[in-house]
Image 1: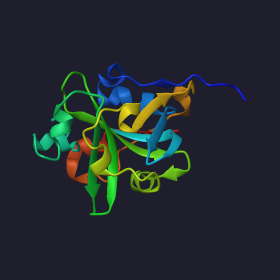
Image 2: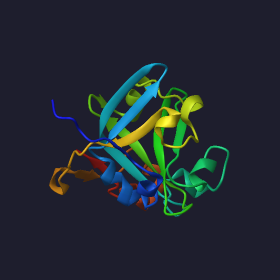
Image 3: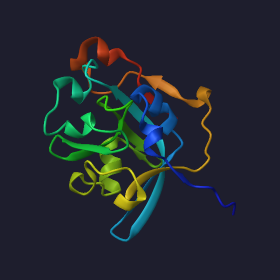
Image 4: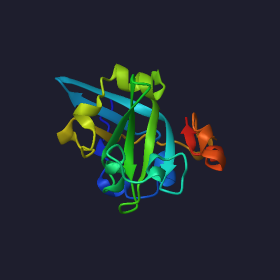
Length: 175
């Protein structure tokens, strides 16, 4: 079996607009090493939420207890609960301290953001506002998978009809 080089994505990778980071996450691996169990899953679907002017982005409401992490440096986890049931896993992006994030919607074998956090046991209390590094137990690796631009499907984001014209942005990326 070929030994794949595994590079942990650095804070610099996330220090770009959410719309730039999102498609670049496709083909990368979400890795969890927590509670004695290590799992790695290829990221297959993401959505970008880009700053205070993006009415679909939580940051458009300003700094709150929930969104505070988005107003900090890039390369941290932003996790929130929806419907009282599902944790939504997001990576905080930049540039600088621009409050933006990318929602990880799917990984290989797990379609849907609530399914992936449930099945991988990713909980807000463990990872929220933690740096995206192996030391925290949840990180993203580049394992050399090349995703061709033509293999990426873009669509409107899901579940943000309330955001008016911002709901029409094709900032959902999927392979």
